[in-house]
Length: 353
Ligand code: NAP
Ligand code: ZN
Image (cartoon, rainbow, N blue to C red; front, top):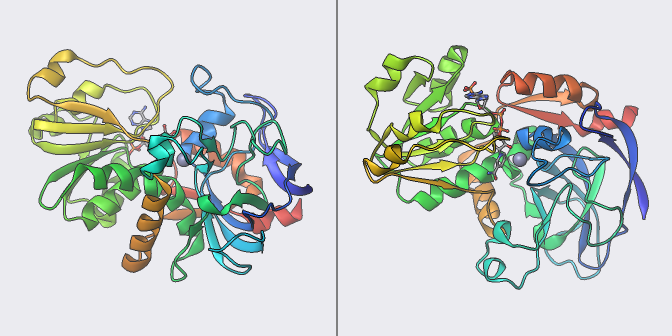
């Protein structure tokens, strides 16, 4: 075991602050990674503030962060895919049981015995729970470590490990989007990646936003049209016309307003995870034979596929790089939807602690 510098929160109302955490020595299957950048996902904030207490109560202290990119510093004797000096990525998962039907199908994100990158019981018992990427290093089983294309800007790669795969997976699963009318609700970290991917697969992309100031950016990111969702006339003009909508909203909202945007057999997939249940109108589903579903991150092989695609097509997240010392300020801005479009922490700033 060794000590690593990190930022943690001591309670739901405490700010994140500098600390030292235990990390395990590399076992034979492990890869040790020096973390270069870590994205700030809204899930980090939900967890730090214990907003998902009824589903996944937070164990304190919490070290969040599951959008990790860095360089391999050490590998265990049985590691075959990585060597010191390689670029490496780690997303929301660091382990699963490898034997359940979901794991066998490459759907580790649906494994009932998965280990999340933070706030999951630690199988190695280095600490009561796993500690995430707001840290100078991490040790992960090589089966959960991804190869990072060398041509991409690393600060913008980090968010691909969660925001990227979480939008990629449902978009790919939905099928051929070419020529389809696709909505992306909420232009934040997930939403802006959803726009990039839906555009890359040939969809007619429409962004729904509550922030009129994001209109120009939405078009620059690849949207063909932008709807300000608080404008009833703009919403009405598109009613019943969408094939597929990806809902990334992090807060309570009227899902029926978006269900009514769908055409026949249209689907809304929720990836946003608001604290409180959403009220669904049966009629909004019945008319049009519409469906509502959910999706959570993606499998490991699928994540590698997404990263390779991003390397080939030069796709990264649009990031505002911050030092770790600004993380609490960044959380306040995230709640106000004031980030274009993902904070990425430059972990070199941790050296000053
Ligand atoms: P984010 O960067 O804060 O983006 C969320 C966007 O939702 C905001 O930028 C805003 O867009 C919109 N929004 C916020 N509050 C709203 C409100 N009250 N009404 C309507 N729209 C609102 O967050 P994120 O990191 O993209 O994460 C989004 C959600 O997905 C979070 O709940 C997160 O926990 C969840 N998540 C789920 C998965 C998964 O596997 N399913 C993975 C990662 C994250 P506009 O300004 O454009 O309106
Ligand atoms: Zn996330």
